[in-house]
Image 1 (cartoon, one colour):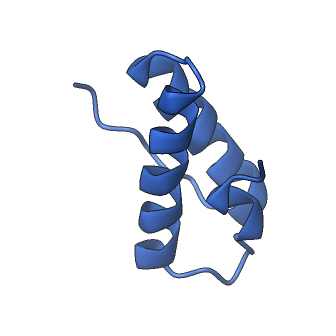
Image 2 (cartoon, rainbow, N blue to C red):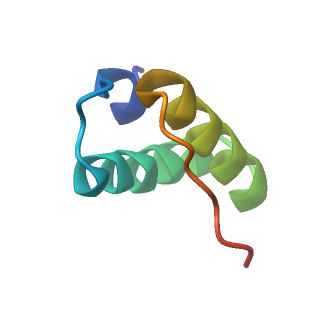
Amino acid sequence: MPLPIERLTKGSSLATIRAAISDSVAILIKEGKTPKQAAGQAFGMARDQTGKPLKRHKT
């Protein structure tokens, strides 16, 4: 199943990026990843897709 992050582009707004990360984390957790693993993967993919230096807040 494609993740919402895969639809991001270099022109995506921060709000769109945040929503895609949130939705993707939820999907990855349902697939069996821990929340930390899911967040790391989602933020990494979002950085790759957008070229923007996104940072994850520590929980």
